[in-house]
Length: 511
Ligand code: KIV
Ligand code: ZN
Image 1 (cartoon, rainbow, N blue to C red):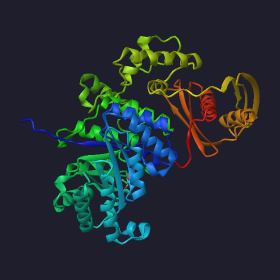
Image 2: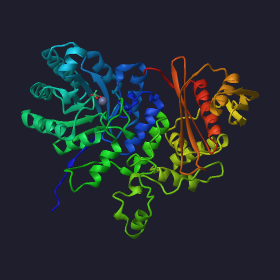
Image 3: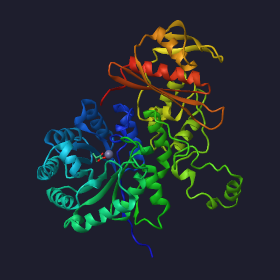
Image 4: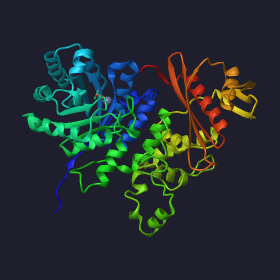
């Protein structure tokens, strides 16, 4: 017998809660690139930001709302008039806009943070939902710190906000305190005790402070929840949110258990994970489920033997179903159309329109003239139209001496606006010496905020993928560089960041 399953709405908040990870700020263009990938993946709702937080956030929500057509685009708003108006304005051009308004309902938050009586919170929540409904029919209400709120108070407030027009009710585990059995049971009781609960979709939003965000979200699903709020790579405030890839693949792999199915095209998961990792500079740990480099690598001989005899002996999912490609072809100026197109297809990007591919291929050729090797992240930026920064700073050559017992020394030649400059410096390590040498001629005055190295592939011949985050006058940029020589990759990443600063890229701090 074929019983029809309920749809599980996937609400991605990488661009909002994910961006609240310390240091994970994204520019408007970067948010649009990620949003386009999420749309391709058929994410149902994309939370693009918190429109009132700053002008930058407002513009990012606006840009995502304009770019995305097939997913609902959402802005967060506190349960106060100015926030809701700002969210409504930012979403004006969205095909399917949603306002997500919230207020804390737990005794500890109401007393110490809001310094409000429960009845004031109740009235403000109802008022906020009514105001939001003036901008859109799609309004979500969140009871912040819901998992620590009094049940009777929650029942009353939920009934009232549904009557006021909220179609989605989110009960977050804001502080990651919940336990799967307890959190799931809470939803069951709420749904049973709120008289009009059948008029809304219930939603979960879990933080990972105890490493239980995915388990708690799935328990909520088992107890009647039909929307999960999650992020790519589990990014998010503090220890992060429930990871989208884990939720989606758990539901898909255990269709024998879950009463729901998602509409996600899972083959876009790995490319999207890579894109988010390269934009934020947050590496994905090798043993991370689904998207970690080792997630499908079988080391033990017994496992390999089993897999060769019958794949399902040790594999519960197929690597290609989540977008792991078979090869990592590095493209360059001699690569032809077929190779470039094939790589795009591996990344899950198909061109229906020959004209669109011709334009992207031309961009590829232009970039390949300036850049030796073209990576997946470069290919993605070409599709979404984000321009490579102007190359004010280019590396001519680099020599680094490092010997135990003596200070490392870097000597390099840089081309700055076409003029060659020599520089040398000592440092506490070879990378430090290299960056000091660059700064001795570039004199940018920028502060180094993050330096991260990742191996692109396995083995010691792998390319190092380096992210360098610089801050100058309140502006943050992430430069990236890749090479088999980590020092060269580091230099390229530093110069990329300088080029971004010089061409006005990046994002204002605190946005
Ligand atoms: O964690 C939380 O409670 C939130 C809400 C704003 C939904 O992020
Ligand atoms: Zn959150």
